Amino acid sequence: MIGAASSMTGEWEADYRVRIRGLPVHTAVDDLHHAIREAAAAYGCLHAARTLRQKLPALSPAQAIEYAQGLADGEAPAHLVAVATEELVKPLNPVRAVETVRHGTPPSPPD
Image 1 (cartoon, rainbow, N blue to C red):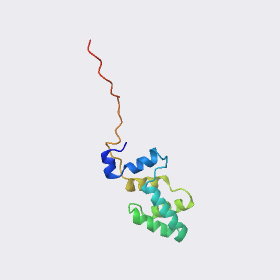
Image 2: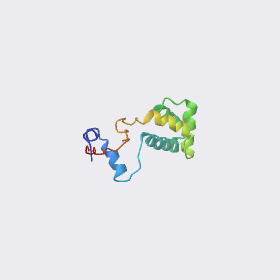
Image 3: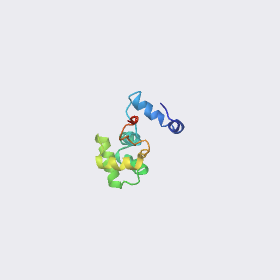
Image 4: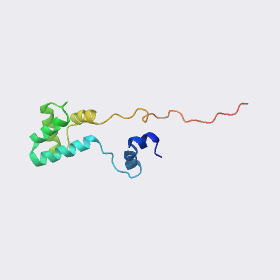
């Protein structure tokens, strides 16, 4: 079921893709990795590092080069992926993250 808030914000689309279609969750970090891999393949790691610094100014030049080289060779260093995730991925809506601790039960009739 699509809630009113999800309908207005468009968040229902991602939920539909994951729960109904079974597609993997695609984040801004995935888009970044795709762009950096393409830049590294086409123009080299230095250009990819510059592109990375434009998208993530929190990284130092040395970190950007390490990140770009890691992506070009296979996997990016985990500590730098954590920085990218913190910068690019929006935090979850705290209301939607609430879990019910106790299921509601109907009250028992008085004796």
